[in-house]
Image (cartoon, rainbow, N blue to C red; front, side):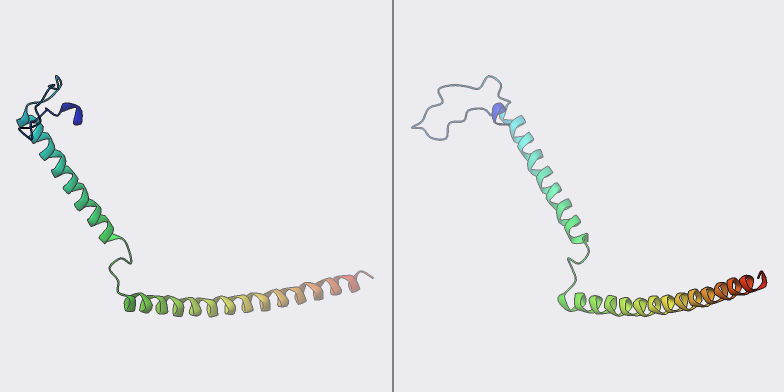
Length: 112
């Protein structure tokens, strides 16, 4: 953009001594700068919208604590269920082991 800017006299004390041969007309330059400014504003709005949609960015501390406590309760409940399933699996394994031992003992005593 700076390579396309024309030289503008800003003070009567400082004359423009060299013109930029690649410069756009002042209307074209103004239009391009306006488009860039509009695009920057549009992109900033998109960033704001995305930031607002992030989880947890709009929740108050009280809400977050409530959500955390709920997740903690669910975790405790699942832990109890897992421990119960583990206990049942251990009982089943012990029962199966006892049956296999009985079968092996029975099979060993019948062959002798």
